Image (cartoon, rainbow, N blue to C red; front, top):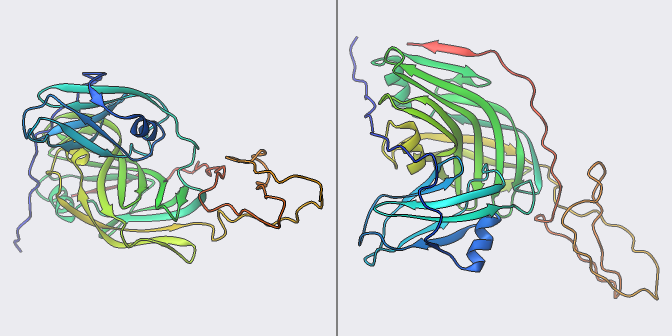
Amino acid sequence: STGTVAAAAVVKRATLPATPPASEGIDVDEQNLAALASGQPATVTASGFRPNEEGIKVVVYSTPVLLDTVTADASGVATWSGALPAALEDGAHTLTFQGSVDRGLAFTLARATAAIGTCTVEGATLNWGYKESFRTYIEGIAKGGWTLTDVAYRYPDFVWENGAGSLDGTALTGLVTYGGSIAFTGHDGALNTTLGNARVELAGDTGYLVFDVTGTTQAGESVDQQGVRLAEFPLADAAVVDGALRLDAVATTLTEAGAAAFGTYQAGEQLDPVTAVIPVDTACGTAVAEEPEADAGASAAVTAVTEPADTEGAPVWPWIVGGLVVVALAAGGGVLIARRSRTAQAEPETTEG
């Protein structure tokens, strides 16, 4: 029998500088700088680019991570709005705009809490096939296959299980880590690219499939990028219902960062849909009521609490005593999250064309 296989088009990948090419020149006010430094959405600008210049890369260091590409306006001013990746570690970083000129901003990332959300996530599942035509190409023309570690392949999806992390079901922010790896190989070893340490990042209206991308691309270029937002998907209709956030065959597209790292398709390429079940404790974020102490002479006091005093025990939340007024903390209150460690490692699974 005969048929037609859609071949992957090789995209030349521009290599990111290993170190920041600039550390000043980005304009940001105090409010947006504070938001950026705490991992919240922020807006920054930089000037000096050519009028209407396209393809200006927004990259965060120390390890270079491409966040997006932007276009300057008629005055040569480029603007980026967004939040830093949830997987980016706290510490010293430099945000850069790279184009006909380079601009930078040194800052220190210090998130308010270690957890992205207040609801603990355990036992999450993720189904995603990357791109069906690419899998067909790998097994056919490229005469290759893929090697799986802590990931299963159940046509037409790769399947991850036992994801763990945290989630804010109201703001739809969170980070769930699945681990595992998929090593794509082909063309007698010329293509050898691994997608490792799978994560689902929720950032309000948009979700991301995040991977560490290492190896050699189809174009023969070396790649080693951590925490790449490889694919994105909309979260407009997502909600926590009956103790879980469910994604049902939601369309995904390749991001600018994904195209730069994987080096096979252009940004905006349609990828396979994603399906996921992210369970949370239905009672998470709910304060436990306590009887106020009877003290008619005591004055009312309000105490701000950002985390429990005892990480081993149940958190005790403050109440306002006086006038029978009770303040109940919302689900976004400071809850210390302990992520369950995953120690079991599955034997690698290999498929070849």
